[in-house]
Length: 153
View 1 (cartoon, rainbow, N blue to C red):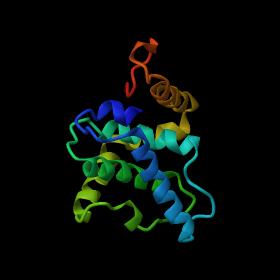
View 2 (cartoon, rainbow, N blue to C red):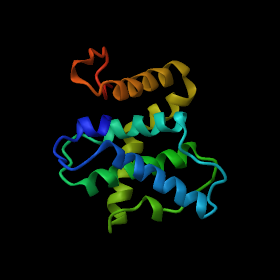
View 3 (tube, helix red, strand yellow):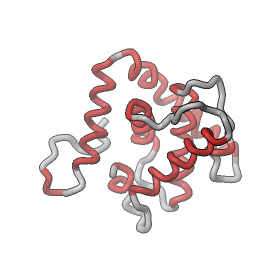
View 4 (cartoon, rainbow, N blue to C red):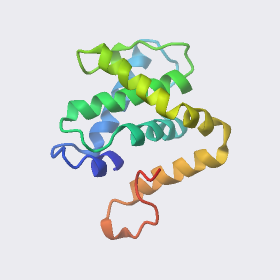
C-alpha cells in the first residue's frame, strides 16, 4: 500500500504489482540455484521497505521507473542481508542502462549506509521501521485514524 499511496502519478499501478516484482526475482534466484531458501521474509521486507521509502519520492511517471527503483533496493537488500556472497544482476535489471542501476545503488549506499547498519544493530530501530510498515498496510482507509503516516521517516 505504501507505493500505491506514494506514487499517485501512476494511474495503472496496483500495490500487488510491486509484490509480483519481488516474488519474481526471488523465484528466479531460487530456480537458478542462487539461493536455497526464499529471501522474501518479514525481516528482509522491512529492510527493503526502509530503502524504498527513501528512494521512491512519488515523482515517478512511468511504472518501469518505479520498478527499476524497487528492484535496485531489492538488489541491495539481497547483497546486504542475503546468504550468498554475490547475486546475478540480470533478475534485478529492467532497463537497458546498467549505469543508471549502479548510480541508484551508489545513491542509496551513500544516503542510507548508516541506517543499513543500524537496522541490524539496534532492535528498537528495526521495530520502529517494522511498525511504520505495518501501519502502511493498515491505513488502506483514509478514515482509519492511523496514528503514523505511511512512509514517515
